[in-house]
Image (tube, rainbow, N blue to C red):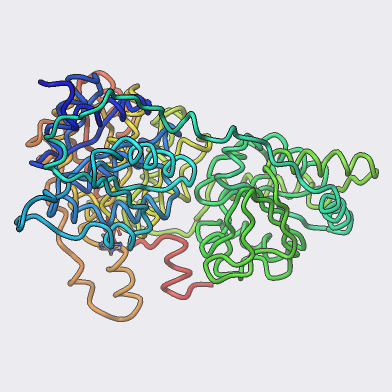
Length: 556
Ligand SMILES: Cc1ncc(C[n+]2csc(CCOP(=O)(O)OP(=O)(O)O)c2C)c(N)n1
């Protein structure tokens, strides 16, 4: 293979950006570059079976590592397949670069040509077209710079005829990392800190919410001290789940997936301090979760209007940890220390709710299981240091409500665009990032079927996954909505099939689970075996989750 063809020089530049893993599906417009990444640059290639998988894997890899995730697709139909994954990465602020081969610019007609830019832009991705060899390396740098600096997906569009030309210059590539402004800790304005301390001094029932930004800033300890000093309870956004696990005053997730107790206490709250948390639609239940609270929002990029909502009464433009520390130190200076919510009684109520977040009794239909008990048993059987990917429709609610005791950053939730189907690709991306065989996917049967072909990818690459499918025999989210509206759920019911057998057909281990008490044994078997395992867990499609009962069935 030559080493000064444009495709080789571009591969060199990608390697200089620190790329060590590439998720690709090859065609005319990206195959030589992909091969050069593997052969000349010694990058690990993971060959997906559908282009959606390439980008969804790169997205999950990026979120799990904090590095830029790189995917690649060929032109035309290879490219149009990735729209959902690009939109997900854009909504989730994932730094991803997609090397998208493009039709030859020198051709009068090409069967696979399509205008790539508007498609990328519509998803929220940035678009960088290479159109001359002179600027090819500048374009790679811009793509990586934008992905890193703006935390978004970038499509680097590279016509196939340019790639096969000789590169006429001495390759001289300065990676985007050399241009990145050094990360700095944004300190809060002391006048704003003073205002917050005055608010804390008057609050009786404050709650501190930590989100993904708080996790990134390492603010856990500082926010726990702030809550301690101000007598506050703690909660997280969905993406921050786990941040305060173990703290006796932590309510788990705020918003749609909150426990009944969490909702009750939020309704009584008179001050919410949110750090690194968007306070969007789901976290605040469209603005109705804490109607009586004054709201302070700490963020490096404050947004007064977000998802159509007024997010806060007072904004602090600062790093979450720095702001929490500054507030606590000013409280000490002023002698402000509050008892607020903090009592043994509240801690006991929180512990009881955590033990059994949804106690409503149901008797499962014979041959099926209560999905709540399934998730709790699974949670107990799988060690807490494992990464867990949660996807699917209705079953997502069970998992997010009943999984406990895992640190923030261990949960991976590929649902930013409200799309099903990305659980398996995301699990492969996380597994590639971790390389430790400690990755579990919890997904629905409908979601799995959308990209079931990636089971073969996992097998072929020797990726060890534990896949637990909450199989309710159809599109549970839809069957429950149909039932709640008096419509026959038959249209969303497909039958449970034999997923264990299908998994075996792909070369994985497969087990059907129709009784409780099996997960510990199955887990030991999984650990002892090579390769991935799929557990097809038959659950009752008649048992609605707590939030579906509330949102769709009108239960109080
Ligand atoms: C890409 C995409 N197609 C369709 C939908 C609509 N949808 C939402 S939930 C759902 C059912 C998912 O079924 P499954 O993964 O088995 O989870 P369950 O709801 O049964 O727990 C569907 C089809 C969607 N959100 N995304």
